[in-house]
Structures are given as C-alpha cells and as structure tokens.
Length: 123
Length: 177
Image 1 (cartoon, rainbow over the protein chains, first blue to last red):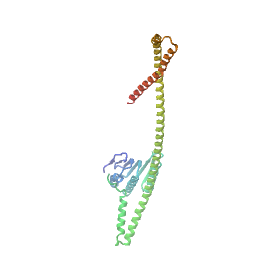
Image 2: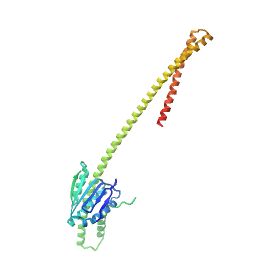
Image 3: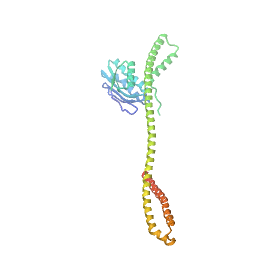
Image 4: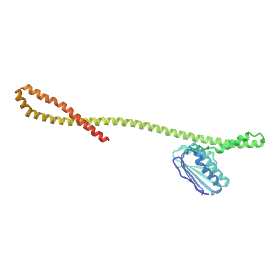
C-alpha cells in the first residue's frame, strides 16, 4: 500500500500516513471544503485495515480546526475503529498544548464517542 | 468557487434510504422493524456526533470571540497610542518651531546690532558734518536724525527676521522632500 502524504498549508494540516503503522495529522485544519480535502484520506483509510500491521499509532497534533473538520476527524476515527474487525490494535495520541483546554476537551469529546483507545498527550 | 461538498454523505444516504422505505407499501412488519432498528442506531450515532460537533463548535466560537476581544482591545490601544503620538508630535513640532523662531530672532538681533553700529558710525562720520554744513549746529535736528535712524532699526529687525524665517522654512521643506 502506498504512503499518503499531503503537505500542510495555512489552512490544511500536514498528513503523513505511511502504511507501516504510523499515521500523523498535524497543523491547522480550516479548509474551505473539508470533505474535498479529507476524501482522499477516507479512501486511503478504507483500504488501510486490510494492509495494516498488527498495531497502528495515530498522532493528532492539531493547532486549530473548524467545525467541518471536526466531522471529518470523527469519520477518520470511525474508520480506525474498523481495525479491530481485522484483529489489529490502534492507539490514537491526541496532542494539545499546555493550557489549551479547548483542544483537550475536544480530545475528551472524541474519546467519549469513539470505540478506539485515545490517549491525551500534553505538549 | 467550487460548490462545497456535503460533510454528511453517509448520513444523507441513510436518510434517503429511510425515506424510500417509508414510502413502500409492500414491506413486511419484520423488515420494517429491522429497518426501524437500523434507523434508530444511525440516529443515535448522528445525535452523538451532533452533540460533540456542537460542543466543539461552541468552543471554537468562544475561542474566536476571545481572540476578537483581544484584537479589539489591542486595536483600541493602538488608536489611543496613535492619538498620543500625534499629540506629542504636534507638541514637538511647536517646540521645534519656537526654537527656530528664537534662534532666528537672536540671529536677527545680532545682525541688527551690527547694522546699528554701522549706522551710528555712518551718522557720526558722514551725516553729522553734512547736516552741520547745511543747517548749522542744531541740537534738536541732531536728535531727530538719530531718532529716525533708531526707529529704522525695528523694521530692519523684522525684515531680517522675516528673511531668515523664509530661508529656514525653505530649508525645512527641502529636507522633508
């Protein structure tokens, strides 16, 4: 399976999915058309469980994201839930800056909704 | 600008499917119960998503509001500082102008002093003998002549000052250019 890479801009995050069990989304996510931006990511993640190693670590290191992106993040996490159907484990590390309560609470919100191991990591 | 795509494509599909089922008359009660169960599960998922997204959206709005308030405060500070700078600038310009005026007045006074000395010497050496020759030794005429010369000093002073000020303004304009 090919690596997926998307260079970050002032409005979109850097995405590095290497198919070797390391996935990272970092930066700012305020694209004008969130679904158009995240669609290739969803397609890649739909294929990923079949090719994934036994353990996957996903890093979310977001500075800021808009409402549409929050829906896309939920959909990404839902795609990661499917890894368990293939008997593969996944750990999501949700990074947030010290004192950034909003980002911490967002991590907790996702944690309460998604059946995936989410660890909150203070930077 | 390209049309914005829907961020709820799956939910839209669920809705359209449920709508189609609701319009079917030949559906069995067992299948209807199963479809209703599926719809409830999807509705629960959507409701939970909506709660989380609303929470996140509220926090984002709050964050933007805080940032906006900070920006407004900073803007007010910048405007107040700009006003203060403008006032100080006016004061500085006035002070510089007064300083130039004082310097020019001093310069003009010095020039007029030398002019007065010159006029005194000219009066004593050349004008007095001429006046004496034509009108004789008349004390009051001498006083009148010297008084007239003395009265000429003030217009000379004003003229010199005006000339020096014009020169200074012209130099200042060139410096600004």
